[in-house]
Length: 114
Image (cartoon, rainbow, N blue to C red; front, side):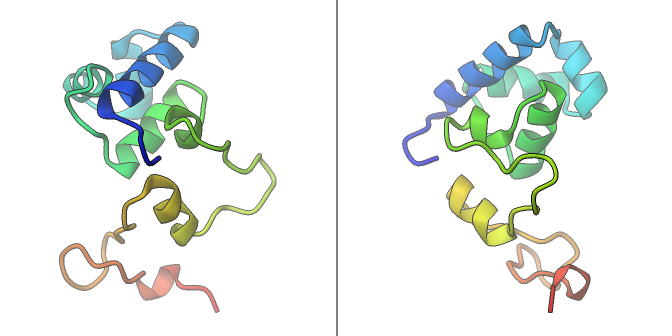
């Protein structure tokens, strides 16, 4: 979210982790995000990638949007937000792994919808 600092995001992640009653080790076990990355993110030293933020949010039972201090994500049963919605929410382009070229913003054919 515009105006969200790494320190503010880290504090929200740490607060959500404590509210869920989890240690960093437990978040690692659930999310696969390294303990070092969790520590650096919570400490405001690193800004997490979309994938890391998604994994941390799932581990602490919240949404990336709530961690970023923005609007809540669509509820279960609603349609999944489009990549363009994610890009506008996070304020960064959405890169597609497996697309041609490094850092391509073009969705691979399998991810495109008609």
